[in-house]
Length: 460
Ligand code: ARG
Image (tube, rainbow, N blue to C red; front, side):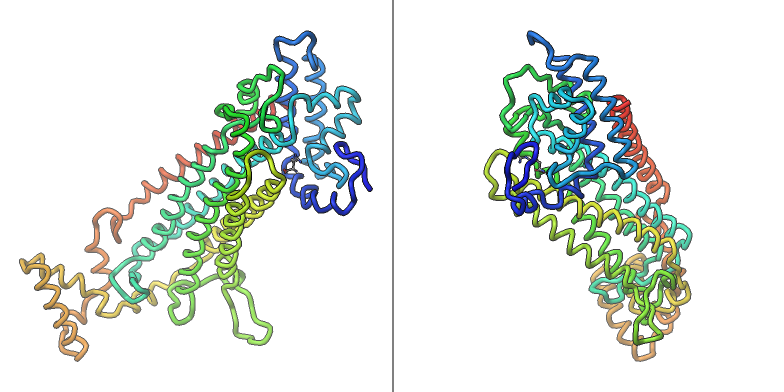
């Protein structure tokens, strides 16, 4: 049997099982837990309509100072959550009580761990979404620079993986960059969902005290309180699932980029070359330089999709109100977040180091790649499209019998230069990407600073 703040006697195995990985995972919540507590205590000290204040303004200031000290300890890696604490919330209450006595015992007035953990996770998630967005933008920017530096080097465009039409390395790189940039919309949706405040919903049904939920929202930098207390308790897990969905979808996009990089850097293609130091060897085959890092991007995508599925499965049959299963939503999104962020950083590095073999890219153009261009030339000369299509189909049959010199002499660079409309070979607008990237980076930075300012104001 064990003794904790909430349970006078609890079976040691049951305690370990229910606590799970919280003593480690919750370390990442320490700062946000202290911020939430600082806002709650400040609001308690300002609460009107009571015979006597639950905590005075001076006492609230004392608690905030002590919370500031705990945040510093956590930043220095000296904050500890014991199994007996169960989680970060009880660890902070224990430390405040050790230092401040009865005042420490008052901080949990009108609050439950249910709204407390919900608020911690939301603050952690807001910060993490903005950090992920910044890393996403860095990868997109790396791909744009890669495309810009290489320029319109001809590259065979493919459909069904078969040679299709003239394209460029620049279009390949910026196309992937744009796919990644478009993923920001999903992260912004997750951010919107996260930017509302559950604090004050307590165990999910409110309390008979005149809590000011708008005040804590303002102190913590949330757009507004989640109005319905029961709704606030049910919203736990939904933010995590929404973020995991954005993460899983982004990983799918990254996995496709990785797959293209594997394909086009394999010796049979050799359009691209991965730096040796980013490849791994074999224990038996001395000649090997394998793209393991890119294969693991594919592999980790499977994991993140798995965690997203786990989060939705966790929620789909859960009854209303708090249930302890929700603790696992935290584990799932933290794993998904960490894996995706590491992947964004490693891909930015590999893309930056990747080299192009322009001559190999040009040599890969078989006559068939020009077929549509030849047909469109006939259209420009007045032939209806379908007639031009059939003429070229016949013309290419002759070509393969060695009879069509005109088609055989087509040049990849010249054909690429004929494609100039928006978004094609010579129509890639780098300024457009730069503007999108810098506007999104600025927006993330501004919000990150605003959150930090709120945090510093509460925890001087
Ligand atoms: N560690 C718990 C969680 O993440 C904290 C909330 C515990 N609440 C409760 N009613 N047992 O869900």
